[in-house]
Length: 335
Image (cartoon, rainbow, N blue to C red):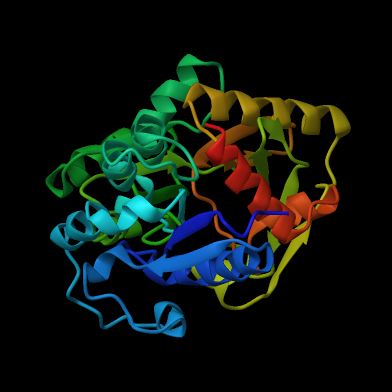
């Protein structure tokens, strides 16, 4: 149980495409921190110094909000107000919350914060660079084609067709929560899907589609949690299946071969350490019918909503949501 004297600032919202997801996570984190006895304040970096006047306002949907800028984040995170906090709990997802920018400001301010540091956050957010690190360290990942500019889509099309063909997965290189992601089923959809992904990122990754099971492994206190299988009834674990429909099954432990499960958990921990992650993370995989698994990505600030996966894995081994949040806090304080 936490000491009521410890002051925590919870960062919520932000200005990435995952702004609303962050709010869903943060309201759960906020309630847990309060119940644990911490002294908690809220801050939405997107608003700069013009913060909401009541705690409930931080969690309201505001898709129309357009007064968001890097200047706001710099103003509020470099202010004297941060000095009174013992810890910054980062409830942000995607963009500047998860790619190392916020972490770099907090490092310069000398503040402790939850999650991974600047370098690991930046590497994990950049899917292309993280793949290079994972391959170098022996973690298998699907084959891919990197598109640095939308004008290169035609050239990339020929490369995709020659390397692994269709279907394939097209996604923003530095996004999350499947925002901007599509499964491209045929050649006719390719250019359109690439252009769609470019709306959310300055670069796009086209990845070999691995048919099979959707699996994930949480990392907590430098240990892997049980493998969880995601079974969306729609067949595709998209944004709606994650956060809105509730029409997805979560099987933990995943009904897979025990030896394969052990190897996937080892690969998850290896991926976590290869990218120098800290505190907690979630590592996503695909498992084909041959028992071959492939690491899709490393999430350094995984979701903490009612649908989220790390809390489900933790619960299976007897760790309640509040205990999970407390462990993350204590791990960050000890970094």
